[in-house]
Length: 489
Image 1 (spheres, helix red, strand yellow):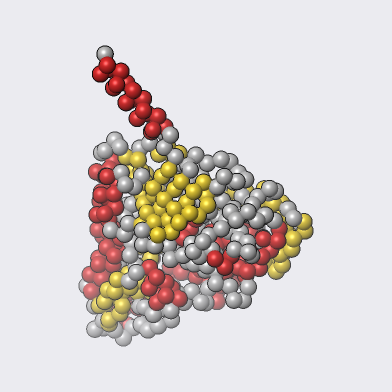
Image 2 (cartoon, one colour):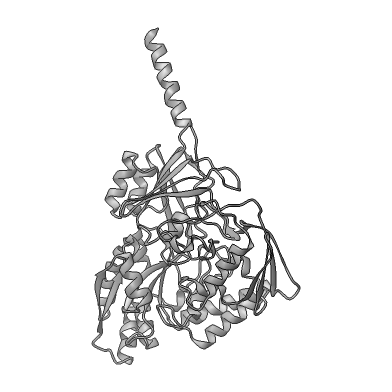
């Protein structure tokens, strides 16, 4: 009888401990270079802080919809040039300072300033004026009509920051979100704690740790040992079948906004020649890359647009795998004997593994791609900002971001005037059918110009403890939103 009582007591204690679990450890392959989403391009920044630490006037929901956040509502004038946002009251930043309309004016003026370091400065290009009408009311005037403003303001690059703390957000982020920054042990982890003064719905978690594990083998070991509770983007898809067979885990497979591309430096020879770019695109066998690098997870794409978007056009037939034709095009361009270029690969497995496969495919048509493995900070400095590269592989995880092809300063350096005009027309168009036509024309233009070689839409392949619920299945933006996550028995 004593043994039975002891067993029942131990079981009760264990059950209570399980039910009371209010902390979580999240695995990530890449460490963010800083923690300020308004001053950096790396997806890992938003993955840690979007919706957790920082909030914008609007936000993306798990289904990609645009939802109210620090703005509870907004009105648009008849010609679509003036938006009036009603702000939530009683909101404070994590340092105790009040959130009001002046913070919105500061944030948006800072983001669109001439010396702005915002990685998505183009989001704010159409803003002509931002004015505080009252502490809880802001008016944004646009230079031309646009239906995109609430969507643009939902990006991580548009989160609201305070003038008192903005300069320090890279290492000590201070937002209005449900979690406050606690600690950053560089090279290891970022720790967050629940915000006791949060204005919104209470969250279930009291603490969250983002653990950085770059090695896929170590990531697998950490999950199996329980050192990590969830890995929303697991770096080794070959292990997912093993997790799926283990009742301790849930495998979560969804879609992302991540167009994975073999980017070409259009501003430098030989890639300034469209014949060379077409040859590269035709040398690529997408399915080999998906199978070999991603173990079958990924959807082939023929342009820079997500297949789950209703406006998507299937353009795979514009760049089929045709190595013979690729060799002919190289000869026409004056490279009958091929050429040598660099292939700079950032750390993610899709790039490192995919790069080896792509290098072999290019070699088969006479292109020698010399692989350089670079860390994320190097990639941002050399490729993204410096354009010091020939080829690179990267997933663009920002939502509906085909507009980047209109940017003259962007790293693959396209910005064809006809394409820029398309994006200008899209920005002011409010009729949905007309917008779809413009987006489809844009997809066809960059596919026909072979700006880049379009590989696949990145799948979201994650694994989590089976007792965790509320993690996003899909990734409509680059975020690991913990606001609805909790443990269950």
